[in-house]
Image (cartoon, rainbow, N blue to C red; front, side, top):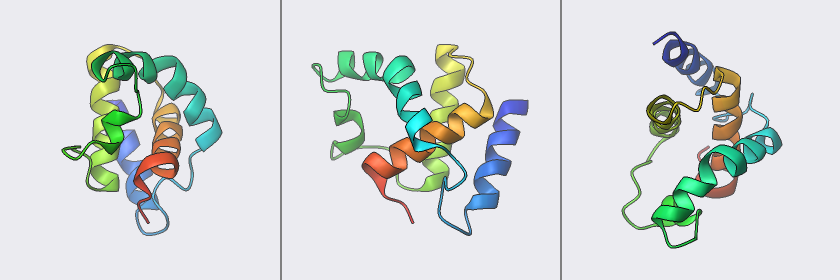
Length: 100
């Protein structure tokens, strides 16, 4: 719960600027490739990026992206720190979502 509050505080502070602007997208890509891509690829016939680009994707806002990252982290026990989640958000936003 403490991680969720910290992440939401980080995302809330940046919501009035560009979402995830305090994150490091390059570090987020490393985290994504190590912690996320394998599971996503397994669910989408080897195409990890399809989870983000499919027509019925669930993420519709910066807040829902932040929540999805936190949910996956908690449910999978990845033990990411709040700054890792922020970096992951910066990567995913830059590569797929393009929230402003």
